[in-house]
Amino acid sequence: MYQSEPLLSRKSSFVKLLVLLLIIIGAGLLSFFTGILIALPLYGSGVIETMSGGIDPANPEYIGMMKFFQVINQVGIFIIPSILFALLVSRNIARYLSLDSFPRAASIAGTILLVYLMLPAIHALAQVNENLELPDYLQGIENWMKESENAAARLTEAFLSTTSISGLLFNIFMVGILAAVGEELLFRSVLIRLFRNWFGNIHIAVIVSAVFFSAFHLQFYGFLPRLLLGLLFGYLFVWSGSVWLPILAHFINNAS
Image 1 (cartoon, rainbow, N blue to C red):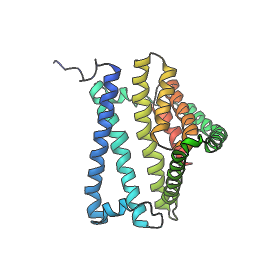
Image 2 (image 1 turned 180 degrees about the horizontal axis):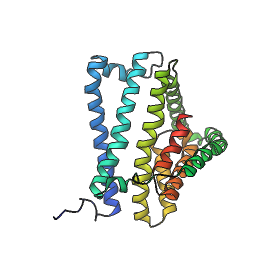
Image 3 (image 1 turned 60 degrees about the vertical axis):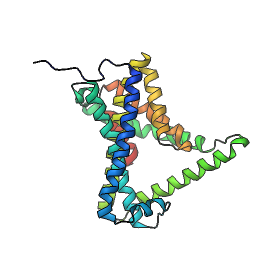
Image 4 (image 1 turned 120 degrees about the horizontal axis):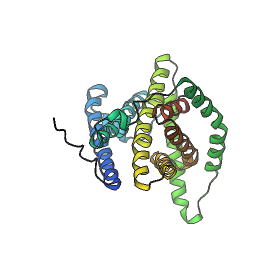
């Protein structure tokens, strides 16, 4: 029985990257509007007003709504595009995304240890990053970035503030599991493979994917430590041939 090749299997890496970007934008918009439709019966007709009213960490309804959209966006921007893209380039989605091979116990233990050993370097880079100053003529941009960082920090603190076991478990699911799975599928399974085929060099592929990973978070004062994490996750992916190790490392870092 004849089976046609996947639509993008013979396309250039540039075309594949362009299609991936379009899928991410389309899936992100679709997930956003789907989230609003789901949120309306849950939070009432004031969803748009609440979201557009600015960050309000003291409002439990606002925080609950933002957590809801955080979950929706993780699925819509990272997980669904990775699966759809794999479907367009390969007949074996699990193999393309490197989900079909599982690391051994020794590799798992070594990965957990490595993440904690890297923490001092990550914190040192964070200090260096926070002390960077832009030239005087870019003062306006620097002030905007600092305000954005402070707003993100306030929202993160509100997200993680909980006094219940159920709240803690949901935070671990949202910040640890979902973020680790989604971001590693996109930035490691998909982008490293794309950039390796494009540049013909695995080290360039890891570095470029790490830069994209750090830049995607839109947090200038966390760029360097997140870049180091991206390099760690990338080389774990390359070394193991499995996305499960970088998912584990990402989970350990976020959940800790």
